[in-house]
Image (cartoon, rainbow, N blue to C red; front, top):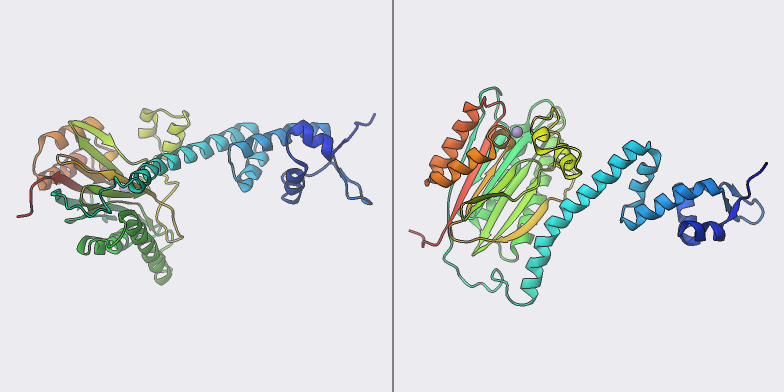
Amino acid sequence: MSVELLTIGAFARASRLSPKALRLYDELELLRPAQVDPASGYRFYHPEQLERARLVAWLRRLGMPLVRIRRVLELEPDLAADEVAGYWAQVMAETAARQDLAAFLVDHLKGRDTTMNSTPTALRIRYAARSDAGLVRARNDDTAYAGTRLVAVADGMGAQGGGDRASAAAIEALKQLDHQPPAGDLLNALEEAVARADASVAGLARSEPELPGLGTTLTAMLWSGSQLALVHIGDSRAYLLRDGELFQITHDHTLVQSMVDEGRLTLDEAASHPQRALLIRALTGGGTRPDLSLHTARAGDRYLLCSDGLSAVVPGDRLHTVLSTVADPEQVVQQLVELANRNGGPDNIACALADVTAESPS
Ligand code: MN
């Protein structure tokens, strides 16, 4: 007994895909017709192909790129479900970063923006930075920096070493922003600096072929007036202490964080997961799209940037206590490093602290 094949028109109606889309999916090998008439070139589809076609249609409605749809279709249902959930977690993280940017642009276009009106504000930052090898690692691959306009931390990596040079190169590429205020837009300046940092890592990898897998995380803040631009890639973190509350204002680019976002892992499980350090994004010299956002700083705000050598071993409530009870920035970073080491110091530690104050420069 033979099953009646559907014409492309009938199949298109049943699957809610257009014949044009079906022809494209055929060319991309996402959905091949069951039969093509050799004389006319007409495509015919088997009714059992409807399920796959509808899945393609739904994934398109989700906005998933065709290459990624192809991957989903090749997977067993369980793994395909993971792939869709992972895609959506990524969309949500990117949307959150874009939300801040959109709010800034709305303000800017309505003339409410304070960065570009060059109204001088009296906000200054007091700052401190410290990096420490910890108690277990022989080398320190972390780099921390703090200056009058810029604070940054980077956690370098390399399969055969060289992580220290990768993190130092990335920070070095940002430093000129500290010495020379950006002429134009703060975000553009920071994004360009990150592209330079990425190019530095690429240059290092080219000149040191015996050091494979070079890369670094990068989390940095740049101030201008009351605006601050935040750039972030990897699993270092930025925290804000405001009105006595501590907020984590970056999103870890780790496999476990994406599993938490998908509801497949609790925060506690993530903290003890054997692969918690596995990054899904880092600065590796291959061109990058970091998270970028703009924030309005207030006098009294305290910002902490740190590598996972601190955040993985010192619980949030301990961070909160130190940040809200110790006034002097130098003492804060010193105590945080000590806390990480008292908890075993299993990894390198980097912290940079910035206090926003209304006082004028001395
Ligand atoms: Mn680390």
